[in-house]
Amino acid sequence: MTYKHNKVLPVSGRDIPTAPPFAETEIFLREVGLNSERTERTYRAGLRAFADWLQQSGHEAYNLEMPWPLSPAPLQTADVLHFRSWLLANKSQTTARTYLAAVISYLHFLDGIDLAPPAVQLGKLLQQRKRRRIEQNQAATVVDKDDARQA
Image (cartoon, rainbow, N blue to C red; front, side, top):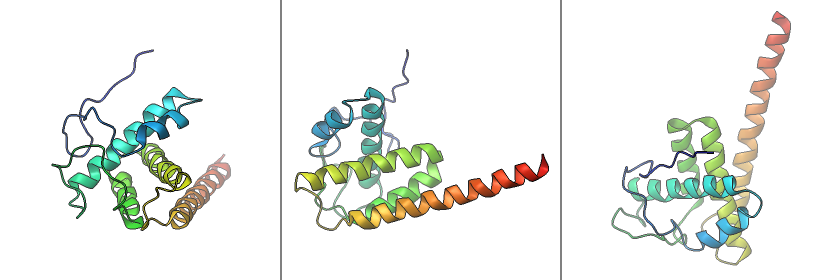
């Protein structure tokens, strides 16, 4: 099977650094990749996109000159939510959902090893994700009913 490998970062267009995007990324990816190499590859892409977006977006704690791995310590809940908005505006819905899952899973991993950023509220992120999923499911139900009526 042949895979398409991007050689540049999705936001800034810079070459992909050889270092991982964040501290502890390699351990996290090894863990999520135990059952699926594809998940590992996709989550790596999601974390790279998040790091690139943070550096490109003018976040006060990150800039384009900072080498990877970046420290996750300055992250805030709002950063993840703004990244989600950027994803929804610039990527497919599936990519947005998967990349957001990568970021939230990484933050959960950090929480599990007592390295979670203090300003990130995982509960709030999960609520936002669930609410979005419910809204999508309700929209799908309406479309399905419309199709059924026309049949």
